Image 1 (tube, helix red, strand yellow):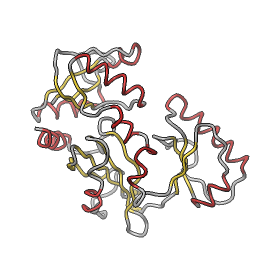
Image 2 (cartoon, rainbow, N blue to C red):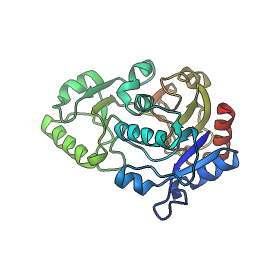
Image 3 (cartoon, one colour):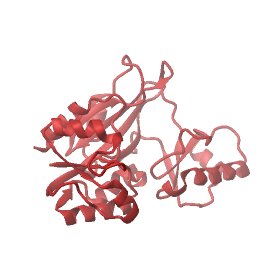
Image 4 (cartoon, helix red, strand yellow):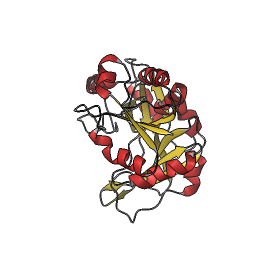
Length: 279
């Protein structure tokens, strides 16, 4: 199994600086690692590897839209590397509407809208109460866009905010728009209690605190993590959060190749677990 990483823009022979710790950890775990020229891919949609290598591969790199990932998958196949996650499986976990039906017991109620469709804020609030806005992949977090919509708001005010959302997401806008019921998460020293779980071939690879919360917080119930170990992809993530009442909710899902490791997560342990599952 080869782990495929993006190269640095400074040199095609060096891993992208953001993935340096992972690259070194993968090699230390005894896995093969290959680099593809990120700038060549971005500019020309061509794949050039730093070595001749073939066989099965896992991708660890930057997020791609599903149509871009499909091109990447096909280009890598032409080099002899076969990505473990096929394009339909990538889209299954990367695009939230595709996986929502599997999660409905444990995730907030969500409504889906086409891009630029008129969204009646009164009807949304009637069904969801307080709600947040995302596209099919990401929110406008860490911007001036509201974290959630609550209380009274005119349709005109909401429409202006939606124009701002489209402006913020820009070319990164993916799929359509979703309105998700806003759930208040429990706070510990000013941090919510969130966990990211990586899954591979139906096994849990890692369970990591994912919101810089202190170490004394409640732990994610193992039974809940195991409940979602058979979603329709071989390599993916599920993010969980503890609600104010002490129950747990599924926040979002992601493809395992483009979901980041939690800050401070042990890269070595992660890739040793990957190797143990795959080999």
